[in-house]
Image (cartoon, rainbow, N blue to C red; front, side, top):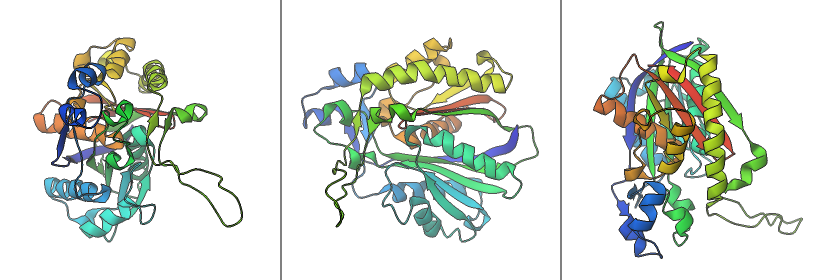
Amino acid sequence: MEKMKIVATAKQVPERVVTNDDLAGLMDTSDDWIYPRTGIHNRHVVTDENTSDLATSVAQKLLKEAGWAASDLDFIIVSTMSPDALSPHTSAIVQGNIGAEKAFAFDINAACSGFVYGMSVASSFLSSGRYQKGMFIGAEVLSKLIDWKDRTVSVLFGDGAGGVLLEASDEEQGLLSEELETFGDRGEAILTGRFANKNAFAGEISPLDPYFHQDGRGVYSFATREVPKALDKALQKANLSADDVDFYLAHQANHRIIESIAKNFGQSMDKFPTNMVEYGNTSAASTAILLDELYKSGQVKPGMTVAFVGFGGGLAIGAQIWKL
């Protein structure tokens, strides 16, 4: 066990709600088409915010909830596939915005597995003994990567951020085990944000294509087949059975995918809470947003055993077992 505790959780989503009926005004679609296929009614979309704005709001909420000063932080990690810019990185902007002068900061991009991968990095820092307090945030403004005339993609995604404060602990709580896997040979199943390169010494070696593209059937097959295998490996490392886990907090990609994962893993959907009906798929932010809502509602409590599950771009999977 890597001993540490989750001290606080928080989320931030844009005020603007885009319903399925709103999308029907932009393209040939309807709530009757979208909801049965995805489990999504709404998504939140920015109007005048960027990724660092959402992440900064989460950071401020986390510090207020825990009663920490920004100067208490040793590090800040932000997971995002939709940063404000390549430089400065989003975590550096957050660090400057909250005045966390003592903290080092960096971003990671593991797409929809970003929450699990980020928590893995954060837990490694804290269990090393070199650092005591850290902040992890998953934040996305996916609306800037979407072709809003493509109904196969635009109906799925939303903007948002969620995060946690973590602290080293001597108590019997923390990360019990994890299984991180990458399937790079299948990576083109999810593509987004390709930069054009027309340098002065060569022809065009990569075309500009900023928009999100996804092989929906391929991703569905990948997630429903490989995620249960990864979960089983993580549980074996922790010497636990699937029934020992109180809740499975999975990346909120699609209700059908999560139903299939639960079925293939032999667990009730009661253990797989979802909230994509309101937020859609928020990539690296989705699990953190769900965790905050479950903490705030009292459904998830200290002492419980939970699994965090991520899957998506890369293609990548992450599964962790935590004792809260």
